[in-house]
Length: 69
Image 1: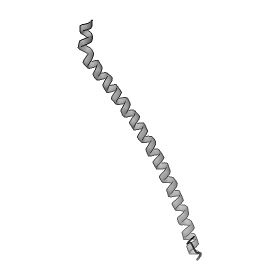
Image 2: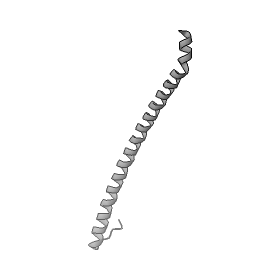
Image 3: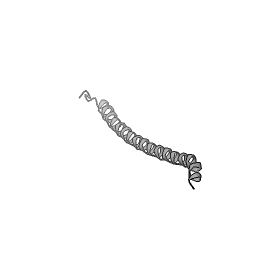
Image 4: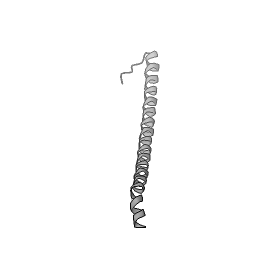
């Protein structure tokens, strides 16, 4: 029995290491997906703000208003 355990130890360790590596990679992937989602939401919000500012600027420019505020 001990001889069999000793023979299978390298393969069992390889499996355990591979499982651990996969779990770590999945966690890293989730982390980066979450960061990308936050980045995308921030980008969309900034684009929305820019769009509103541009509309305000161009609308007031057409009316001859001072937009230097």
